[in-house]
Image 1 (cartoon, rainbow, N blue to C red):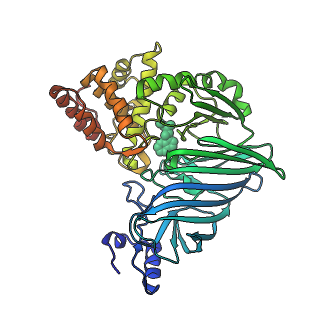
Image 2 (image 1 turned 120 degrees about the horizontal axis):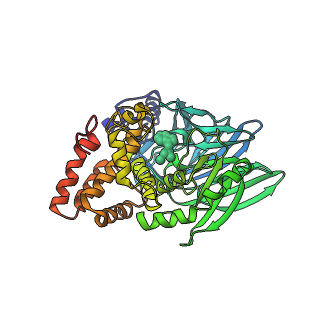
Image 3 (image 1 turned 180 degrees about the horizontal axis):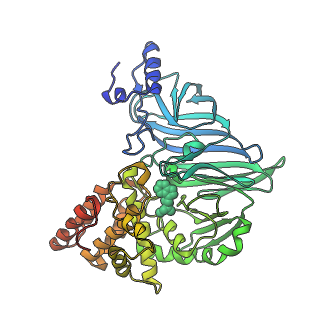
Length: 475
Ligand code: TRP
Ligand code: ZN
């Protein structure tokens, strides 16, 4: 039996169990257990090693009164090593049974790690199907920064939000942005309620007092962007000028306040396609939950989620994420500024193009320390460098957003507008539906800066603005 050292490093109880199972199971064994995490710098247990998921097929039923979820998750994956066992991430809930390639598999749970030992080893390169049957009352997860995600209960319904870890509260997954997959999400709820999710609605049918909504996402999606919203949503459909279907789902109590801003989605999309390149997905829209159902908006794929009626600027931010974050996805949670810096920049650009302050004016206000009313908030922007948040609790702090946006503006000034838009559109095209990190980005910008002089200017940005502590000495 050959054990790669990585399988033994940081051996958790789950990994040890898997190892023991492997060692005991006689002849024909050639695989080793997949790692129990992908060593994200902030969330080391998120994701798993040894396989790559191609598709999630989720069949869910939810009873809001009993707060009870039943789920069947079919996970189609390809082994990237010979595997004797592998993990999925799942927090809470009760696993009732697991099969791999149609045969019962033994499993073991330890915290968020579900270790699965298939009866036959999986060969490197093999595509295999795992079915996990589970049920229970899904958890709300409190993040290192005290925000709440996972499964959020709402009045008479629920809202599932997954950044950065929460998806494991409602389905078993390789729960890390580095492994994207296509999805089918089917949700059955009591008749009268709606279940909204990502992608396109392919079926809606009612039987025995329950309605099933089937949603399909053909383009790759990171698990943190998967969502389900259950409630008495009002659904409206339209189309953008470029032919992309728009589906909005709005809590009736928010309908009046959100109508005007939501009606601008096609116009915002058109402006973004002009600036960022072709829209990467097959549909778009919004989910407007009640104010208080969540503490923040989230760029859930194709259909961002808002807690209460959104302002136009917030819609611009969340739809910009469809290019920056959802299509071009960070390799790890350290690269968050690539999401939030660009989405913040998109808001500033929108203002510049719609009779508001220019981006340069916004940049100058921030640098001068009079962007926010409170000195504390202005100072917080310089608390740490965007490409190196000090801890998991800081990945959504203002240096990642505003100082990240300022980095983008520094690039624009260094290369000029024409080259800048070529870089932005080239970046979204090159890494469309992929993953990228900060070094991929800085290398790309340097290579496409246009001239030796411009290359020198962008290179001078990275040290003080991306990686350096404190406020850069020059704006
Ligand atoms: N990505 C969200 C936005 O900017 C904000 C957010 C919600 C977030 N939850 C998070 C950012 C967790 C980082 C981590 O619209
Ligand atoms: Zn954002």
